[in-house]
Length: 367
Image (tube, rainbow, N blue to C red; front, side, top):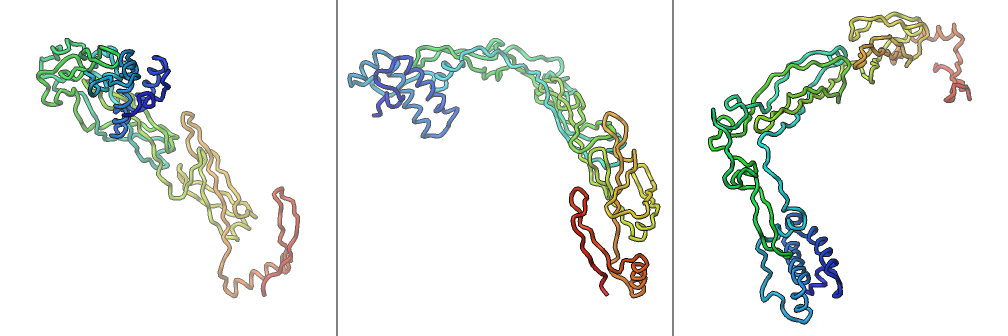
């Protein structure tokens, strides 16, 4: 048989308070409601038996003298959970549970294209949710009937009993099994909702999507979530925005970006190009000598700023295309052009991050 002092982790000269403190600590760790492992439950029984002996002065004296303190196994009328109730507040009054409870919030996601995100739109969405039962108007009872006070608990929602534990007789409270803790019973439940006071239903809801939304934004529709049990107040419905990818426009906050490919001749001479924006056609002025990667800013053609109404900018990034294959005639023309510009032998400049030239590399065209 295991030594009771070793089981509780205390010395043989431990005081009653030290024994009680040690047991509380172990009981919290080993209680079956916390740790259901069979080995742990066996350990909990040993700890409880040790405490029952060492917390009783007469039993402890008999144990210290080498005698049996039980004459058999430990016998607790209320079981382990009642012992824990006595220590951790299980005997307190809880009162009846309310039948009417607030409903849960709901979340759905909808996709919008870039144009809808910029200018706003309205959508009809279909949701499957809980609504008040129209048959019983949320009472859970058949027409004209009402919940009746539970005869078992007299409306308290709980029953009390006296149990024997290691610290003596203890009054504990338990939810009433007859009414599941509600304090009342529905003898004639509504056939439509089975006494729940709510039913599942498909609802069509209009959603106004404001201009300037982006992925992750949520629109709150107060009271459009699930109705609570017993016809309780509905929660809120949250509509989360997911923005679809555009064919050629890229969003960065309130700014839109796009790439525009032009020939090197157009970049050298300058040109005007028509592009399609969210507002319709717009003209991009490409200045003579424009370099690849140069930005052209079109004011006020970006995204609407949420809750402000003004617009960001559209930035057009110029990409100069260099021909990869030249005919003999084209190559001849380019060589003549280089000679006119004095570029038979050209210089390539390597610049530092501050823009200063730190070296020059001389090269010549291949012949």
